[in-house]
Length: 282
Ligand SMILES: C[S@@+](CC[C@H](N)C(=O)[O-])C[C@H]1O[C@@H](n2cnc3c(N)ncnc32)[C@H](O)[C@@H]1O
View 1: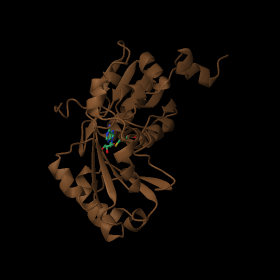
View 2: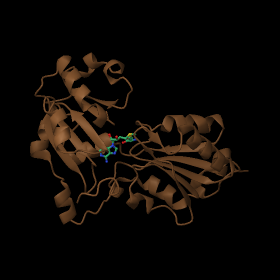
View 3: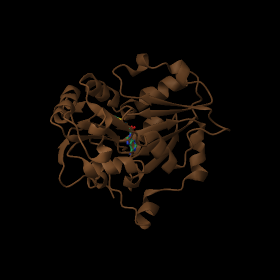
């Protein structure tokens, strides 16, 4: 007799009465950063629910037989409320489907993958989590900014900039300590606060900052400045989401380590067009 796992594992193509859900990280944009496991699940999926930050190139890997549903969110606007997404995953799984929940970056880093997993586990649905390369790793690597470096930073922090009361909700004293790299996700709306609070809590105004826009894609742009120049640079360069804010002395390494820029990427035939709909600039 088959075990519970054998009945429901997508590995052997057999799906039990309750189906199977894969929470899959799509990585930051470059489709070649997708894991082999994620690719395999997209090939065998029957239903795919995907987010805004998933490129067309990655969507092209989805089986032609799968039903696809866009459930993306833009900043404060939710096309489908989170509870609706959780419920849809449960409902499809209970119909015995092989379901893929496809999310940008890594499902467990500012991706609400934890909430979706909780909802599925509560309903006893068979589930797996396939990690993806999170924006911090992908964007920093392509920008030539090592997030840790023996001469610069002994730790790294991933922080959300998308908070109602960012001044009071973050521990700025802790964030302003030396020897660490700060990576702000969803931080474009709060660059002024970030700059003001970090300086007020002790980081030098000349601390280097990188804004990495549409990282790892052929629209990738890295804007370098300092905490003091950050708000103005943001306005002057008309930077758009998705953008990651990296603060710390590791950013100074970009000057000599930058190996990827969008022009050389295009010249070498690199055609990742993620977010092309969001940003029509060449
Ligand atoms: C809701 S969070 C999702 C993060 C995702 N789960 C991850 O692990 O990368 C979205 C934020 O991630 C960052 N982000 C995602 N992809 C990016 C990219 N290609 N370039 C720059 N920032 C990106 C931006 O700060 C964006 O506002």
